[in-house]
Image (tube, rainbow, N blue to C red; front, side, top):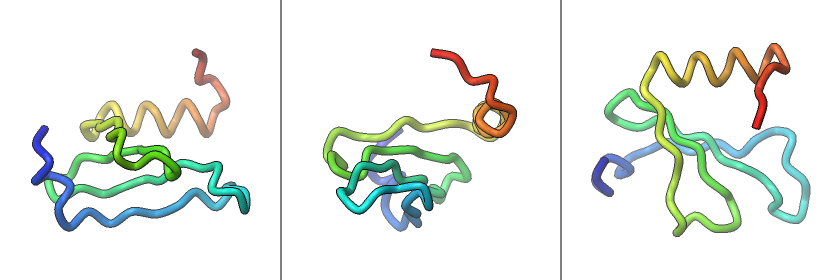
Length: 68
């Protein structure tokens, strides 16, 4: 992934975010991949997912089966 991939990305803040900027942002990249980053530390970078992995991630969040 190059930094150019982030050019033109559309970022959205989680609707569950608090007022103290304690949240994550989701970005749709031009390549069709998805990204997630820390809203208070954007310079740190983002986790980037291809379509299949992104769907698995979203499904695990929805089903509450995501483990760490």
